[in-house]
Length: 122
Image (tube, rainbow, N blue to C red):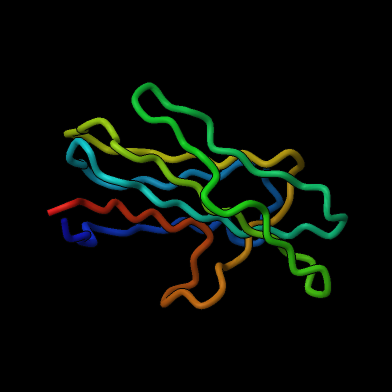
């Protein structure tokens, strides 16, 4: 079984302090994997992130909160495996325990706050 990249997308909240951010992508085949990461300012070190289960897919933590204390930001990575097929737009919403500013994910090719990567087995 080979793994293939299907598509990616990103969202950016700009400089606004918010408690959630969403990222959309187009239709997806059943059984794919969605990997979604989020970065945010975490000055006190107490902010947590979650991705609520939507009507078809359940998200789990792939990488627990990783925090850079000196630069005061953190990020999480979530995944949903064996997702339901969708002919319309798919949305992942990240919810934070406290309103804060979302930040670019390090080492990405674009300035991203949310990266969604549906993968398929071929």
